[in-house]
Amino acid sequence: MKAFQVNAPHDFAVVEAELPSVGSGEVRVRVAFAGICGSDMHIIHGDNAFVRYPRITGHEFAGVIDAVGEGVTEVGVGARVCIDPVISCGECYPCRISRPNVCRSLEVIGVHRHGGFEECVVVPAANVHVLPDHIGLDAAALVEPYTIAANVLDRMQPHPGDALLILGAGVIGLTILQMARAIGLGEIIVTDIIDERLALARELGATHTLNSREVDVEAEIMALTDGEGIPLIADAACVPALLAQMLRVASPAGRIGLLGFSATPSELVQLEVIKKELTLVGSRLNNRKFPEVLSLMTEGKLDPLALVSHRLPLSEMPDAIDMLEHHPEKARKVLVRIEA
Image (cartoon, rainbow, N blue to C red; front, top):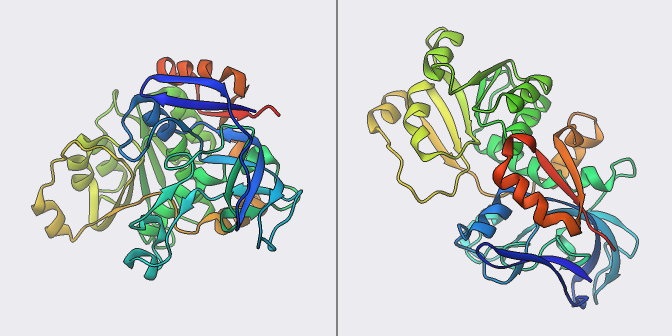
C-alpha cells in the first residue's frame, strides 16, 4: 500500500508500506481523506521534539473500518469514522483528573505512531468516532482541527457574549472563529498579515479584521473596546514575541490561550499580569472534544469545507508540501485524497 513517510528532517516521499495487522482492541481504517496540518510541517522541518523517524504522519483523517481486532464490539467493519489522535494511559495524574490530552505517557497518532497519510492505518478502537450519515468523509477529516479550537476556548472559560481576539487567520485561527460563533461569543477581531486570509475571516463571521503589517493593532483594539481591552485572546499565530502585546491589550480579568510550541522565550511583564489578574492558559491537542464538534457539525453550525483550498491525491503530497512551504498565501487547508 502507499504511504507518505518522513524519513528524517527534510527527507520525505510517498513509499510502499506493509498492510498493518490488527491487534486486540484495535481497528484498521481504510483512510479516505487526511488533512495537512502545521504540525506535519514541523515534523518535516525537524522542529517537533516528540516525533521519532521514520514516521508516517497525519493526525487529521477519516475513513471506513475494514477490520476489527479481538475484543472490539462497539464498532464493526463498514463503519464510517473519524479518529481522535490522542492516546493516553488512564492512570497518571492528568488522566486521573480528566486531562488525558497532557498524559505523562501521551502518544499522538501521526507523531508517536504511524498516522493517516497511508491507505490503511491501525488505531485503538476507543479512539474512533462513528459519523452521522450526512457528514461526508472529507468534512470528517477536519473534525480534529475544530477540536483544537474547542479545547482552547474551553480552557479560556468564556462567558456568553465575550469579545475575542484571534491572532492569526490560518486554519486554526479560522476554526477558532467558527467555534466562537457557534458557542455564542460576541465581537470577534482577527489579525493576520495576509489579506486573503483576512477576507475569508470576514466571510466566516469576523466582526473586524486587522492586517498587522498595515495598522497599529494595539491602538485599533483599544479603540474598538473603548479603552477597556479585550477579555479573550487566542494566540493562533504562535509567535513568542507577541505575548507582551497580548498582555497589554487584554482587559482586566482577561484570559489568554496559548497554542504554540516554540522554545523561544517570551517577554512576560509581571505587572501586566498581576494588576489585571490575567489568566494565561496553555492548550494542547483536545480533551475529548470530538463529540462536541460532531454535534455542532450535525447542527450546521460549523462549515469545515469552507476551509479547504486544495484537494490532492496522495501521490501529489510532495507538491502540496512545496506549496505550503513557499506559497502559504495560496493555501488554507489542503485535503489529501488517500488512494486505495
